[in-house]
Length: 81
Image (tube, rainbow, N blue to C red; front, side):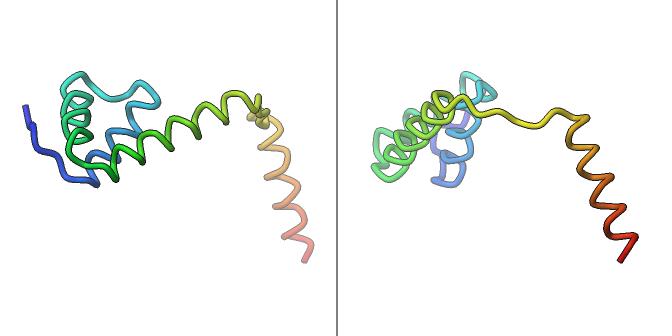
């Protein structure tokens, strides 16, 4: 287990933790890093707020078939030019 973590690693683990992709030891090392690094601690707070805002926004995305249709139309338009 690696206790000391650099800021760029802590930021990466913070992002992974937001999506439940970080392991226990990664999260523990990140929390220890946040104890002594105010900047990374603030990043984690802002990152959490941003995630909650996106969840509350109830955003809709295109389906795979809609994306494919757009891709085909763009290809056809480019071929005509």
